[in-house]
View (cartoon, rainbow, N blue to C red):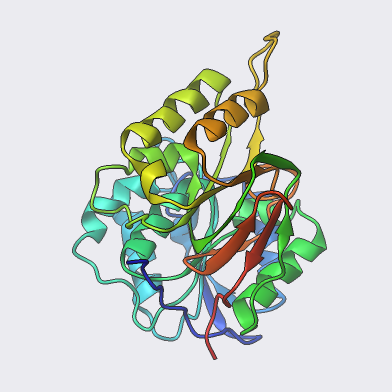
Length: 303
């Protein structure tokens, strides 16, 4: 049985939204550029704790967990935007096990390491938004920011996205789940991974050499993931080349995708590349791998 996911209420301009830093510390200038963009649309709020640092993290686990749970629990906060990915969100999951998913639901926006929180939310039947973190948002085209606002506010499905490569032809439908390949593999076998039966699996990554992509993909295969999902959407894989190698990451991914036999298209503008278009996780999509199209069949938010 394919899971159904509960959409959050639609946002409106000037709604209150929270800005949190649940993972790595960040560059303040790029953070402020992103906050300015969402602050022109919503009332963006954050505390001084977001600027704390503990080694490679934005403060210790207790600080980051408290900030996250407070934002999710506050009924006046309508959405939660993450400052940066990097690493650290997964460290919060064990303590989140005792916390309820936000009710009413509210969209959480981020990608990369924030995939850990997306998967936790999808395990609770919630829709969230795989989209730019605030330190990335200011470097992206204005149209990406507009797509994000439309996705959060419109009760119509998001516009379709186009890829550039067909790895395995075919058409598949199901809820879009997944995110960063490295994080998805790290949550296999934990209670924080949602059921993937009938899903369209989204994967993207950065800085992973081809043999590491192969190892993580093989982990998914050995865990039976490709026996449960219906199709594969590949976003950007930036900085994933082996220096002076006669092969590239695209060749490796194509070979791995062919072995699954599942409809698979790549080159979608999702992830760490020059474009990172926001997409709702948990909504039903149609992947037409031959046409290299990803069509959204449901809205990310409800009236």
